[in-house]
Image (cartoon, rainbow, N blue to C red; front, side, top):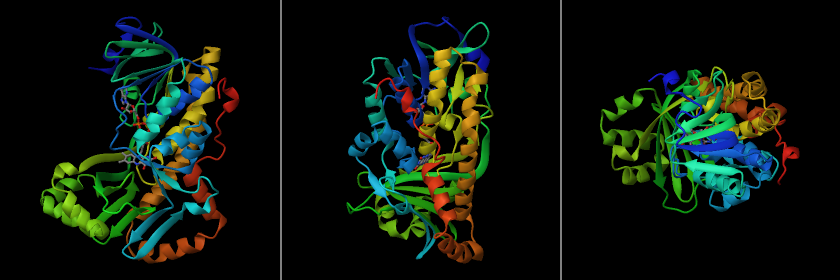
Length: 420
Ligand SMILES: Cc1cc2nc3c(=O)[nH]c(=O)nc-3n(C[C@H](O)[C@H](O)[C@H](O)COP(=O)(O)OP(=O)(O)OC[C@H]3O[C@@H](n4cnc5c(N)ncnc54)[C@H](O)[C@@H]3O)c2cc1C
């Protein structure tokens, strides 16, 4: 069925009608942070989520200081942390005993001088609990948006899902990297193969309660890089990066071969891999890509988070950027609803403000990815020495601050809050 055929006209399929100022599709970090900001500013918000639980296994768990700052301002961070998390000090690229790249967050000012490994379920549950305190909040889960509602002039005025119609001044597509809303609006995903990798994603259970305080990428000759970090409570999250299609080749040699390759890449966890990976079903293969939607707004619609710009897991930026998107979009939506102007021209101010930050981050991720994947004498001998020298310069501190906080000018517009 074409996107146009899937669309419904207002009122055509009104099983259960819902009305709000803003209808957010997708209760991920982007959608729920935005919902809370809008509710605090006195708007009526509906959030539609296809899943009934917060268990999103194949999602990022590493929070950067920028996202922590925003969540703290919203009063959400402490409660999310109390549900369980680990602090990590450094992001390190290691090859046998050598550290090729070392990003040390302890150089940043407290209290955001670390990375946080926190299950997304903890973050989402806490955000949702805060939203639920508002009478003007409506949360409909187990409901997959499959159509957009348009008025007689073709402007988007709502979304429809499994017997529900959500009418609103603005629809926000916060439904992730495979965004259905984006597709229904006829907007190209702008997928790029810059990070030409698949990721084999799995967890191991640690034998000791004390997990490493570093997020590490292990490299060794002849194997693809492996990401590993301590995941709450006693797990080790492992991500083995493979060239697109590479898994089929590795797997054709059998489970024993996959385990041997993994053990070679992360000898430290060889015993756990041997003991705990008993079937290929213990491993999940994820298609990893980055992209930037060709435009982020249409009349009545704006895209944010992964739906607007998708990032590779390199450097753990997706949640950070999604949460900050909400901060940038918030005052624009308050104004759009206040003026009754949900035109593409007005809503595309979001893209104008945010696109340069996204481009900067994609460049930095490209550099991190190159450092991770490149081999040869320069990469393994010369660059670590250069990096050690650069570490004591203002350039390093600037890059570290950008990776950790993104655009420093992004501030929660709490002057718009009617409730604090
Ligand atoms: C393997 C992997 C590891 C990663 N690691 C990190 C990391 O460590 N740190 C980091 O910051 N980022 C990481 N990321 C990226 C990060 O997970 C995303 O950038 C982030 O979750 C994006 O948030 P979002 O709210 O935009 O979208 P999502 O988190 O994808 O949320 C979208 C929501 O929309 C819902 N939805 C989808 N379609 C519909 C529909 N039709 N109707 C209703 N609801 C719908 C989904 O169920 C979901 O709840 C990783 C990504 C991958 C793939």
